[in-house]
Amino acid sequence: MNAAEQLLGAEALARHGDRVALLCGEESVSYRDLADRVARAAGALRALGIGPGDRVLLLMRDTPEFAAAWLGVVRAGAAAIALNTKLTEDDFRHIRADSGARLALVEDVFASARPDLSAEQAKQGSLAVAGATVPAGARDWRAELARAAPTAACDAGPATPAFWLYSSGTTGKPKGIVHTHASVLASGEALRLLGIAPGERVFVTSKYFFAYGLEHGLLGALSVGATGIALADWANPATALAAAARHRPVAMFSVPSFYRRLLSEPPDRLAPLRPIRHFVAAGERLPLPVIEQWQGAVGNQILSLYGTSEAYCACLMMPPGSESRGRTGRLLPLTEARLRDAEGNEPAPGEAGVLWLRHQALAAGYVNRPEQTRAQFEAGWFCTQDLFVRDAEGFYIHQGRADELVKIAGQWVKPGELEETAAANPLVAEAACVSVTDAEGFERLALFVTARGDEARALEAASIACELGLPRFKRPKWIRSVAELPRTATGKVQRYKLRELLLRELAGKS
Image (tube, rainbow, N blue to C red; front, side, top):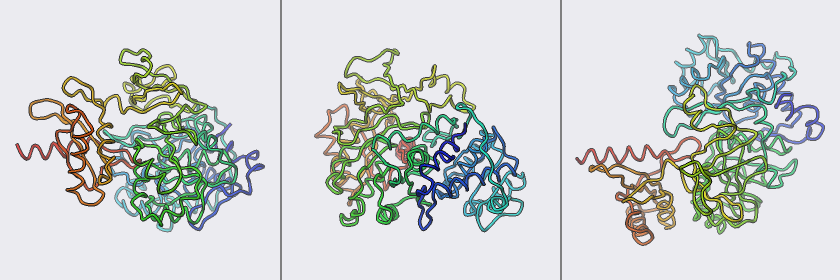
């Protein structure tokens, strides 16, 4: 078997061959056309010496060319590693060394932006460039494709590596996570829950190098015969609204912070979103104010979804029509879960525990990190380090990270509670809370807010909200305003950067 063949082989093409697989700007690619491109990409890779077990880096925009190359790597029996297009040179070098990749396939716009790095890779004979401008010494990917013959899929077992994900690096160097052909074939459970039918269109604003975007925008869409709508470049409100108006998706997958950005648009600009049946959010906590404001502005609910790069596939999701009430979701069909307290036991009803997951798509561990693998992977289960409560209806409610709970004045405090209290005020656009050790060695809370309008008024509103809505021990010692919250490419808040910001300020005053 081979996952790429399962998605685009003869049986799949008999069902969906003439349907549109991908839409990207002016380009429309059918399933049959994509299958041919994938087979040719596998042939080109073979001509470049890539075979089973090799790793290939892909630094490309989200286009049909990327999709064909990524799936071509899988078809060739190698492992595809899609990279963040905003990756620093240091992180590129780290991932290249960490993965032992034999080839980097880079779009010309990125090769030109990093001429020294490109020249270095070309000199080593490990660079192929897709585009009109190919540096000296690099292989011309499009020329290789033009002369390649379609190649049969390499036979691979379910446990054969098919792709690697690199974590977004919220706390340090990105870490590699290996997924198999079985992971690819588990894609799309959230789309099935939503009832997405063959030929219907799915729009995902998250990039393909991120598990969320890869599953729902590409692999999951292909698994149900749907059409994926791709934005080549990073999404912004204008490009997202234009894509929705042009392609009319039935479902949209994004992150809470992007929905919040859309809510800042004039109400009439949101008209292209109102016909969409389903909106889904993942990647970070979905605040209740965003859910309520979206319902009022667009007329439809946002469904919370939860997954991890280690599990790859979505694991929890709110079913359509269910009341949110701050809940994260129920288990999707392929997922098993259990909660553990600090002693490793199942917590009492209503008490929080750390979520452990078991899934067909679960990674085996982290590349070159045996200690962290032992700490978080155990007998087919993965420790997410996220705290959840399970209610009587079987819904899971996210309580924050187990490593983010802070003991203040002898009592545990959940930073997310401060964030939701502040963000409930309409003058506050976003809020993030971190713990900071004060000059006397005590843990204290710092709240950072972004303003919807005047900065001073937002700071005052956040202060009043915390004073009125929280007991004294939960109130922040410091409240600061920032132009925007620092985030990873996948939308997660980089809290350590906020902590460093305040520590530099405090050091300057001492």
